Each structure stands twice: as C-alpha cells, then as structure tokens.
Image (cartoon, rainbow, N blue to C red; front, top):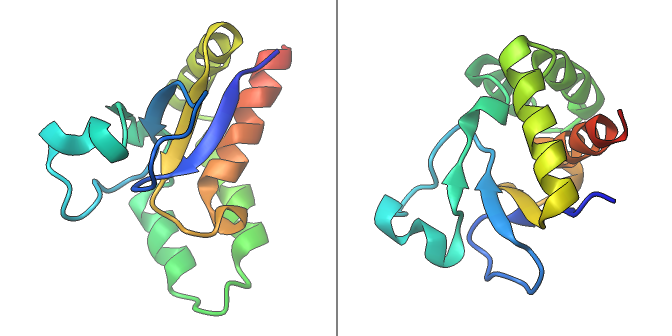
Amino acid sequence: MSKIRTYQVGLPRKPGEGLRIGVMRYWPRGVKKEDAAEKHLDVWFPLLAPSRELIQWYRADPTGKRWDQFAKRYKREMQTTDSRQAIQLLARLAERTPISIGCTCGDETHCHRSVLRKLIEEAAKV
C-alpha cells in the first residue's frame, strides 16, 4: 500500500506527511535553503517538475482551459528515462515510508502534483 500524500509548499506540516519532497521547477521565493525543512520541504526534486516551456505555455492562458492538455503533456515529459526512474524510486519509497510531494500551487486540482501522485501510485502497482 502506497503511503503518498501531496501538500502545498509553505503550509505547516501535518502528522503522517513523512518526507516532504518539493517537486516544483523553481525554488520558492523568499525561502532560504537552510530554512526550507521548517515549513517547506526536506528535499527539492525539480526533475519531476514540468519543463520551463510547459509551465510558460500553461500560464499564458489565464482562463485555465489548458489544464487537460497540460496534464497530457506533463505525463509525456515524465516518460523520459530519468523521470520514469525517479517515479519508480518514489513508488518504492512510498511502499515503505510516508512521503509527501509538494508544490507552491494553491489549487491542487490544477497542479502537476496531482498528476504526479497518480503516476507514482500507478508505478507502485507494477
């Protein structure tokens, strides 16, 4: 059984979150790396973030109508060897210990972390 959660970077830790892994492309503004573990993340893993190009493309449409296409394109990006192996690693880790993947986005339903969580859960079933 997978022990994976998601969280918003910057919000206080919750019981059972385990290792907090930041999966955003950019380091959070105003956060000193030495202070990151307090409220933000234990490990920064930008390899599992959307590419800069994909982020720019998605943000260029303020209506949010690009979400479905964004999610498909993000999944394709995660099919590269490095990303696939990282997802496998997190899937195996989540079988043994609680982990939480986080991003700075406020709305998880329109954040890549919701897609990534599903990819990790699917990898755990293999």
